[in-house]
Figure 1 (cartoon, rainbow, N blue to C red):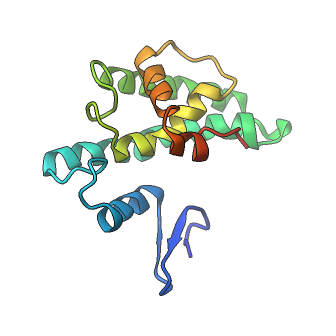
Figure 2: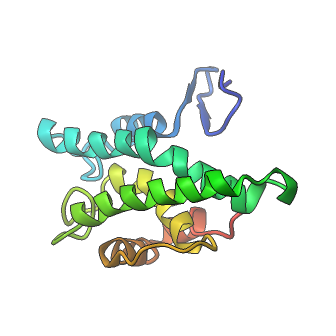
Length: 162
């Protein structure tokens, strides 16, 4: 269903399939909850949400995957600790961008949860539970603590790493 051979993939009853997590989130909001504030209708607000969703994929995902795989998925002989250290340094700089964005607000795009926070959420969880050194980022920690109050986040995202 997914030409990349990955999950997630959403398949409709008629066989139509959609892949890429952020695209699936947008599709579900557009089809199931078109008036939901998590994906604003206002063009500028929506663009801000999409910017952070794209930023997560385009910038944060690569170093976070390296860190995650090094600590969780790869057998010890395959772990590249030099690459992990570089990825952790890169991720730390990127998390500082999020830290600044969160100044004075609860979520990435203001005081209301949006798809931007949902897209970032799994990386926020991993950043906080991986056995790594990380800079003190109180705004990011506050976002994580807020996400931990949401039943969907605790049920589907804030799980043991595997």
